[in-house]
Amino acid sequence: MNPDTSSAVELALGWQRAASAHDVDRVLALSDENIEVGGPRGSSRGHQVVRDWVARTGITLEPLRVFAHAGAVVLEQRATWNIEGIPASAKVIGAVFRVSHGVVTSVVRYDSLDEALAAAGLGVEHETSG
Image (cartoon, rainbow, N blue to C red; front, side, top):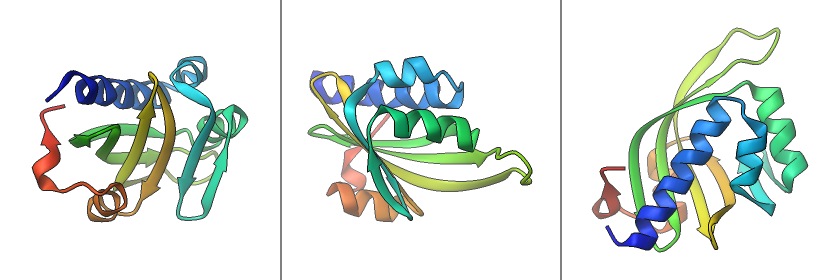
């Protein structure tokens, strides 16, 4: 793995760890000011969106597999949502992280690894050891 790809993977994994720890300040420090956060219901941009998302979802993310190439990182993750008043639910998902200039510029969730890989233009040959 080349140094740029390795750096992108570490950044995406660090963002994921910070989100799982509900460390909003760290997530924001790793995020572009105009970060895109998206999923099945569409996408929005900016630090306030990230702040609200971390607070609202109570999410924890466990990385399972990592794929990366040219600033795109796909993480297969076990996501558990801990939303107040709703029983916790877990699901294996795919997320596409876009990294540029040392920050995460986009995080978009997909319902499966295959969807995430297709969206990022990556394939199984891009799997890394993370």
